[in-house]
View 1: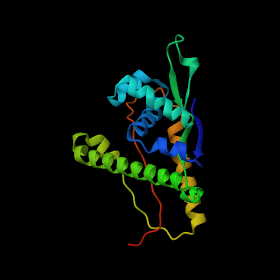
View 2: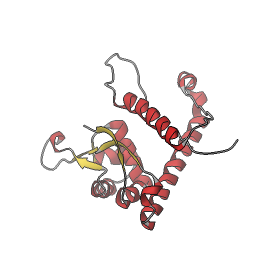
View 3: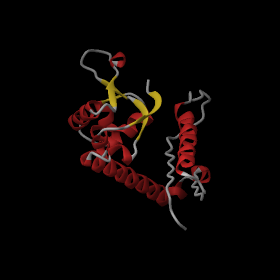
Length: 190
């Protein structure tokens, strides 16, 4: 089972692992689908099994995934799961380490590109599903806060998303779809 806490990253290895597009997709698949084998992840992402296995080992070495041996049906089957429900980092943690700072910035840039691509794909196809089109949302708010207050806002938003993401899914027969929700807060001017 995934640990519910968000892990604060403080070294370059997990950031470098996160900065790779395919590994980021695998982490997303593990978050949505739960523990999986390399074969399952390869099918989900359209990659070769050997490629998925290699990248799972990189993610494991970085401490982002771990084996789930209790799920294996035999000694040859290897299941993998996330180590924590999410990751977080601040660039100030890497002020003295140029390679870690570069990895942190690249991981953030990759995450932003993937978020933009997902929004663009949704907008291009939103009319094809009016029910979800009515439920989908976007929000933008201007706040007047200190850095400490922005940290509080972030903690509250993350707590809401974790609560919904880690909840027990009701067995009520309703069709549920994986949904991505992301938020950013940073200083800006209108």
